[in-house]
Length: 188
Image (cartoon, rainbow, N blue to C red; front, top):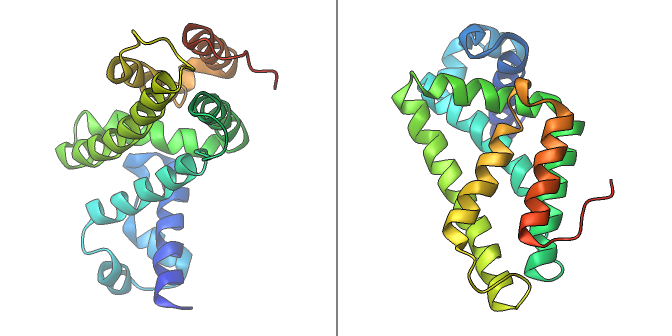
């Protein structure tokens, strides 16, 4: 197994542990054992538990970044992103579980809170840029505040990871968000 493959396997094992046992159940020894390495090897790749968690967040955010397709108008890209996130969370419920676990834990863990702030900041800037391009291209109204709307979009998408949201409420929220933005309603 190459170094990159081993690193990815450790991140995936930590992701699996969080999905199955929650953040509080994450044990680095079990992560190492799942990959077939000793704890010293895990620490070679991830000197701290925070570094391992950063890897888990990066893995999760890579899945979310995969929903950003550069095809079509900025409004099409935004609509497609919203719909792709909904499908992603429906098809990969463990992704939502892990992100919810990390978000809840971040209220008590400043290091994790910083990791999630950085990640959410990147996502916010990406959505804000899509909105700005859609306004410039005439796809959305000129009075739209792209910064505020990006914050609302991200808040809705993050809330979809919480178990209490439920699939029906998540779909309702996204449909309403699309209506507010003047995007054609989702059909899937």
